[in-house]
Image (cartoon, rainbow, N blue to C red; front, side, top):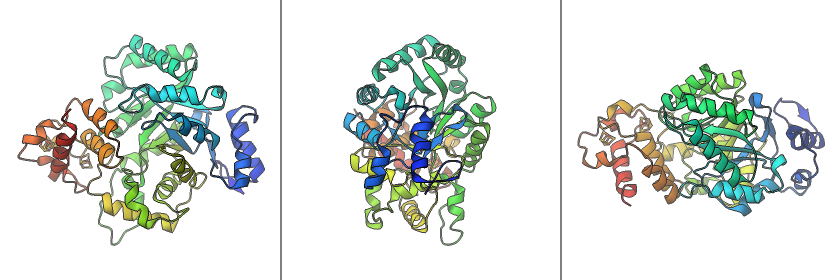
Length: 415
Ligand code: SF4
Ligand code: SF4
């Protein structure tokens, strides 16, 4: 027996029919052979969810292309039942455009079976003509005439969020059938205020934001004794609840709290790995529709799908998450936190600098790290000669901020 997103108990056959076929509004013919997979015990998507009021049906665990343009991997994900793909004109980081091209190639002939999201980075003065041109480029690379969800990418500034040209562009693109829904993604220091404004002003159909157990006060409340890592991010759970209540589709990313996966190998066993534990944590939140994660190998896809359909956190999960949090808490910059922002007289974009560092040290993705760092308006160059280091004492989570930003400037600041 499986459980669908309404919590009803369904038989396996009904479950499969009620998800893959009926939910996408397409014939079962040509869909990934999920039933066959289930019978052989091969990993596959076990749960499809409705993405808020969009009505789109997507898997609970979906494929992010921020770190890959591998056609074979995309096909493998599709064969495992993954029918939602998240991309951006700038993906994979450092090789813009190639992820959309690969999706176009891998999913040729399957457009009516999948849901596609793309995004574009904008500024407060980006105009609708530029946006329409970028959309046309994405459509061409994706080999499609519409994108299901188009997002204002990495929003971290209210002026960018409220750029009126974006909304004129969205209205025109929707009318022309080139996009179906729009919204914002974000993981920067001003995430909370941007999401609050987006929801209060009804600016979004869908949000995609960074969220993991390490930001969630509820996680730390499970360990009221003997766990001295400070809880953080009281704002995000409130926002996820508000978004869900409004019918906005809620997707989360960066669910692995930095993705130092090799560190966890000694503590894992089959069926109980660190990523599966982290996914079960976010999927247990009824305000979250689904998660998007970078998938870098066939083995990783299969491992990740081991958590699909599992919205209950186990004791063994808590042990793994706690171990990881204790090992990494003092170097992990919490997405959406901005507590050190006013502490730096040089206005260094500390969370963004530390995100670039994370791509390098945690993800091992040097290209993404360098391209992210190179795009910063206020990088960490000033840190190299800073002597007061006031940012460090401003971090409530004990990060040696000045040391981390200096390291990052040294490692990523040179060409
Ligand atoms: S080290 Fe100095 S310049 Fe760099 S972020 Fe901290 S306070 Fe700002
Ligand atoms: S360095 Fe610390 S205070 Fe600054 S954004 Fe990251 S977690 Fe928050």
